[in-house]
Length: 108
Image (cartoon, rainbow, N blue to C red):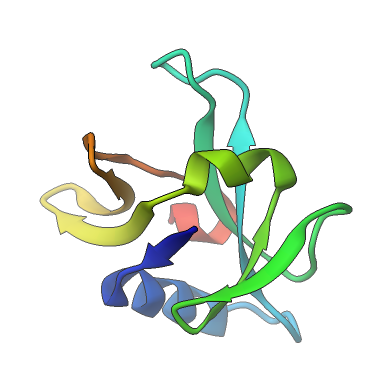
């Protein structure tokens, strides 16, 4: 499947603590056709799964996965890095590193 780095786990937990929801999980989904012609993977925090999501635990974080996103997550590492312009989530794979679109509370 995929893993979160310690930095990604820390960022998710930090942002989740600031929300007033009784339960929080990271959600990974796809948007149709990003710039590469492939769907973009999106990470967000949700209080509950969207209908049809699969719930798992990855690197100590509860995660909801949109079924259509599962094939695109194989072998990936989700990281959070600090840049001169701020922090961002990234996806690391054998092909290299690319940005991971963050929505909602994680986009701040």
